[in-house]
Length: 114
Ligand SMILES: Nc1ncnc2c1ncn2[C@@H]1O[C@H](COP(=O)(O)OP(=O)(O)OP(=O)(O)O)[C@@H](O)[C@H]1O
Ligand SMILES: [Mg+2]
Image (cartoon, rainbow, N blue to C red; front, side, top):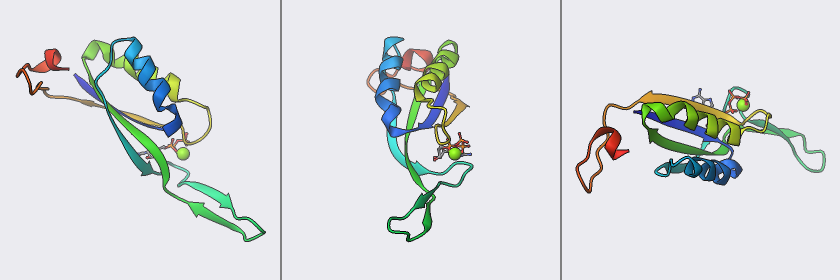
């Protein structure tokens, strides 16, 4: 089992959720976050010649989804291909091994619980 943590542009969320559902990946968690990448935010030009300023924390969505090992590469690929615009700020994907999962209602463990 792996946890995929993906941070991407908020407007990409619906496409990503729909594409994951199509391959049977339904359970997931979404959080509205703010963050910065390697450019440290964006430079913004103020109106009426008042110069520029920097917005360093930009709104993003963080999606967390735990999947079984054989589904990991496919899920990562779906997230990436639906998140990409090609411009800076498209986001990041982190992958973590998961020790166990438990479905609270039934007590099932491991891959049965995902
Ligand atoms: N090293 C990191 N650790 C944790 N979160 C990160 C990291 N890098 C980026 N993020 C998160 O991902 C979001 C998007 O990052 P972003 O896509 O700008 O990364 P980047 O490395 O600057 O790539 P790009 O050059 O394509 O913009 C950030 O706002 C932040 O929330
Ligand atoms: Mg960036």
